[in-house]
Image (cartoon, rainbow, N blue to C red; front, side, top):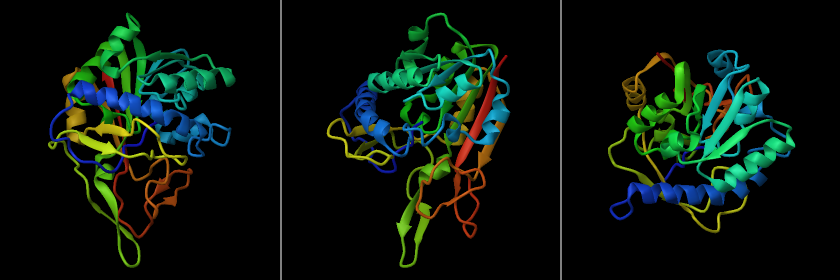
Amino acid sequence: MREPEQHGTPPQHGPTVADMVRANEANWDARTPVHVASEFYGLDGSRTAEDWFAPFEWQDLGDLRGRDLLHLQCHLGTETAAFADRGARATGLDFSAAALTEARRLAAAGGRDLTFVRSDVHRAPEALGDRRFDVIYTGKGALCYLPDLTAWAQIVASLLRPGGMLYLVEFHPLLDALGPTPTPDNQDLLLRHDYLAGRGPQRSDSPHTYTDGPALTEATTSYEWRHGLGEVVTAVSAAGLRVDVLRETEQAPWKRFDTMVPGDNGWWRLPPDEPIVPLLYALRATKG
């Protein structure tokens, strides 16, 4: 699970897209020990694999027993573990060697039979060979690290068996566009960031990640790409996948802004006197 950063400026010139992807890989390697030790991820047992999911996700996914499932951009495998617990033959894929070392350790410690493959998403077909899947799951801060959603959707489609499903649960681009602005009495949420693509990748150079814990000491630069909801749906449909579920929800899996309050299921939402706006969306699409 990954949360997009909330600051940065478009690079003016210099690095290629490949350079940016390599910078992101180094950045996630550097983040890994901070995340492993953080209270946020709760790897000391204070959080369970199920904590990262909304109830509607399991409803949309259906029975996973005996199904081959691929979790793209899996990071520490915190969500991958939940799929195994529900009976799937789960494989996690990520480009961070450091993260996958920890994911394998955590899976072994939990007695889970999980497979982890190191690869950039763009090279996933090469890394996975002839393996095909019934379900591909991704999201919660994943798409912002992908420069080309058309290519990504085509890769996803190529890795699915006929009848297989893509299930994407991602931060809503409206949430990514909002930012807190201090006022004398409160923090008002205003549009402070782009909703749509158009300005190119956003460069961030920050020693802090989205979790608690110490600052990074190296590889602090990362790049993100904005993707509006229309761009996502169009890319998935153009890859030959039929969209049959598109949800928007006012809840998020953790407290993104200081003013947020807990919901009934332990997730977070804006306070009742604030407008109801989408914070997360889910998309399910099927390969014919």
